Length: 343
Image (spheres, rainbow, N blue to C red):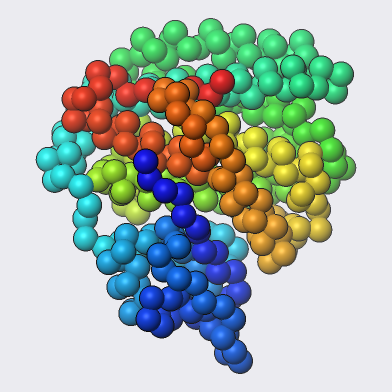
């Protein structure tokens, strides 16, 4: 089993990363801030415009350490990798599947099945844990609608129809998302999903969580020998990590959404951690990003029992396990890709 190592987040906009022996060194214009042993890291996420030295990027590539660049406000910019990992025959099979609409649809519906199943679980969990604070009948009704969609998704053979079912179930789920926010209602309300840019506090948190989850899924797919840019449900598009978006669908609600809800309901994140710009976009402040990322890393360390493998592992390894299961399915070791059905 892969060992879950640390992710280094560099948030200072003027920080520059260099290599010193076997260490990544974070430097500011006036001083050295910190140093981290490379063997303890599995990825580095840099939110600085200053960047990193070629020597450090090369050392990370040699050691399989993902190095991702983001804007200071959290927009994904680029990702560096070393030599292509995995068997070229596996990637050839991935490309063949992606080129066949019927076969790719069979993979795509597995991702959507996982997403809708887990969306139901989030709603049902709320009615069980907070029956006095949420509209139980309304959430149960939406849960029943999602349940009715599951057999339609499982039998779907048309990619366009599959996207339609995914969009409709997502709308139903988000229509009642505001009821899951139990604290800080004056500062955190949800009306509809908005992105590029997010227009309220909840959407800002969701967008940042989805960015981090997509990055984890892309790294997991690369580690499994797959091409994160060639998807089955999300069709290939220049610059879009389509397969990473496919893989994260089944983890969006149960991983990212629940993390955002827990952070707001537990008052880990508050209105002071966000700021509205003149354009109307809502973004995390520097302190907000630090608080968010600290809680995100803590979440990744929590131990769960994987529903398919029936083995205990940290949440942070779930994308890697699912990527390996997808690779095994493409190789023919598994008949059908097993989505992450959380219990």
